[in-house]
Figure (tube, rainbow, N blue to C red):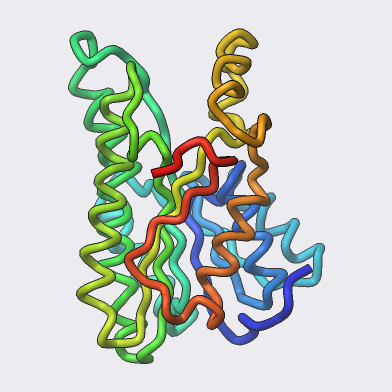
Length: 250
């Protein structure tokens, strides 16, 4: 359970239907925040919201196609009208469309950039105004170790996740004077739906690169988000926190 320090705060988590996003939403609710669970459809967002309510928390599901700028803008308007503010923004939505660069289609490139990177810009642009007015806020963007080191067959994903890091550092500078921090988390290989299809031989090869010799859990990332969203991290901004079992030590 959380410590209740986010009581009275409103948090919004994209990609909240599964994996890391779901774990983050549940953790922030346990910390006391009212959590808006964003997913592509209401059917996918609702189970996380229901799990939070069953655990004694407050949550609303919200259906948004985060890859569409106009959809995010409309959603932000509706959310701010209903809740008045958003104090904690966690950009967790992400997809992959893996292919070698020479074979990658424009659609594969554009879909990943729109979902994994551009959505961070649109949510931040429209929701941080309420943080500026209240002179308090937390923006936490989920990047990836792939954004730090690259990976064959993932030029689109690596570019998007590297862009998330640069975007985070830039807005950290812009928002600091308003008591708003912006940080990124770079997960390594986490046991989620995205990593589940990896063949066993590839999993074994990856494990050899991880000093802790195990894949992480979504809850490991959620714990890091919980810290960065709290007042305990008030002097940390523009930082990239690797949650990767020691895979990337640089």
